[in-house]
Amino acid sequence: MRAVGAKTAAELAAELELRRLKDDFHRAERAREEAERAEWYRLLEIAEKPVAEDLRSMGLDVDSAWDLYLIPDSRPKAIPVLLKHLALDYPDRVLEGIANALNDPTARPWWADLREMMLSTHREAVRDRLAATLSGIATRVHYTDLLDFLGNDKLGSNRIYFLRPVNRIGNRISPGQGRAVIETVADDPILGVEANRILDPQRSEPEPIGILIPR
Image (cartoon, rainbow, N blue to C red):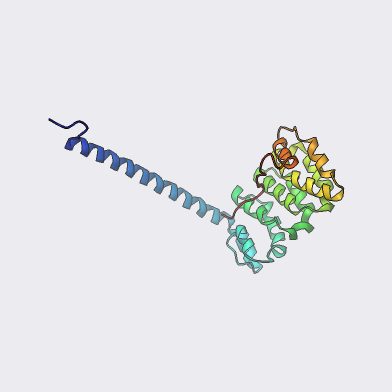
């Protein structure tokens, strides 16, 4: 008589076979995902080649705009090249890398170009990265532009990037000036959550925005 819970040889073999099939399926699925990822990077490298070649022709030894952060003081030389390529038709991830590389204080002399491109582009990836860039490099002289961005409904959720620089710079211009602006959008369906984080930082920790890591 077979003990309760004991398995016959046939049952055990069937169980092992099922486990093997599952393992084979998972291995095949992982291999497929890795192959797709490798192909994605290969196509991005091909797409980004003109950008990399232009940068290397200027003495910046990189394979991608994402790598410019590795070369100190590279941005002043790279920025005109980046602006040229940002206006061209690349995959979104390439455009994100180009725009992300512009997020450096040395890009301030090109503020007007960056502003115009953010306002006129039809590529959401470009608009998002340029909004993050402009918010990151803004100073007091850009405060009026920041207020205009914040009130521009066409920028949608990208306006969130400008809340903190408006608050910070406005308060430096005059105590409470930036905060007063933030208070006006505290109930806004798009801006309200971040606005309330700024107004009451003890209520919830601010979430970092505008940051992209190299690919």
